[in-house]
Length: 556
Image 1 (cartoon, rainbow, N blue to C red):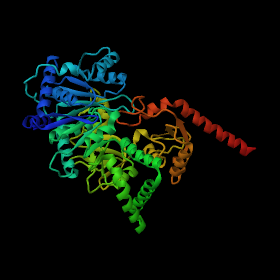
Image 2: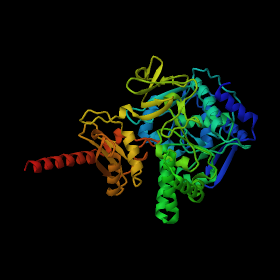
Image 3: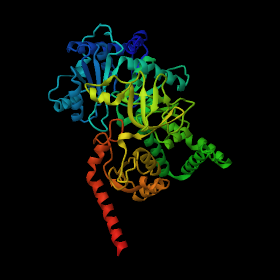
Image 4: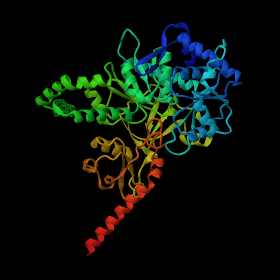
């Protein structure tokens, strides 16, 4: 039985069981199997009436909701290929994707979204809003046959560099992946009588998000959906989750926020916290003594438990993906009693390549490959992947497909270190900074170290390609003293060519709204460099002037 048939069977056989909960502030709105099937049947009738044929593309542009889930299932039930789009993305970028996918129908969550995308995409076809989609007379049609090789989704890459590409995922890709994620969840989820409380806030347009959604519907287990990211803290308090999928930026924000709050309050709690953190680090490194054990036990009893309760009183564990998580942050959550299991994958690998095994967690590494997935490291240090999770190809881009799938191996573009099967992501090969010295420098490890050494900074990006030295771009205006101390700390054990020689301060933060971050919080490096080109050029010119002045003084 394929994944879609299993989802529908679960909804039909357990019509009174809750399947989706929308979190609206302090309120939970439940949707059981019967309610979802009713919405799906209405949406399916509308999609069919719009003339959509099997193999046609149906785009979905809306924030996460129960109706999003039903629109997705309805289009798939018709044999259509779903093109999920991020509702917060720039309309002109969405228009590029839509011109590529050529959908027969676009389903928009609201009139405002429909009008905005219509303006950016003048040659658009049929656009319908959810209000009319879910008012149709229900359809009684069964599932359209879907062969293993049939595409079920075209998911556009985040476009951190270059043109977004439509990744074609097949039924076989999803059929392989869902049992793997269910198997891994079974290893880490706590055995409880009731269902897991699973909270989800990442947009369903991402491959990993789709896998989380479809996995929960396949188990079956209810999934709690965030409806307002500006109220995420309130929603998490309402959801009281046992676990949820994260991106590193969110976990870093939680950790930094806890530290900032304690420093602001000061007093005994801050002292116990800082001493407890130091003790935990010493014990973890194998050099802790009796006083460290006493300090850690006291911090756990008085401070750490309260911190954990504030983050999530029912949390069993967290899952982190989309980018490597800093070792220090992973250990910090572990210190609080909240294991963080890392996952690694790309859209082209159906969202996942590797996941942490509970008994093989190594901070800073992203786990071992899923069973049935082969990995190896090329001579250049690039991770290559082969298996049933590898995508069919880029939509109408055969040359780009051939460039990344060679001899059956998908070339991920990630520079890695593999130790006993456990993967460490060093950085993106295309992100390498090559200064005038000719050395290859991966920026990600430097950025991680800098942020770890500078609590006042929440973002940074290294620059210096084809420049005399590496500099760090720092938004948000942390104090110069804090930044200089962090640079000194980072540089302490680095060779000369990798040292950070200058900080470039900019006021504007990196956000998805201004186009400097992707929707899942990844740096759009080329865009950032162009955006701050004047400040970057001025900093290097100033450094050049300083060197010339120094040379002149020495000559004199």
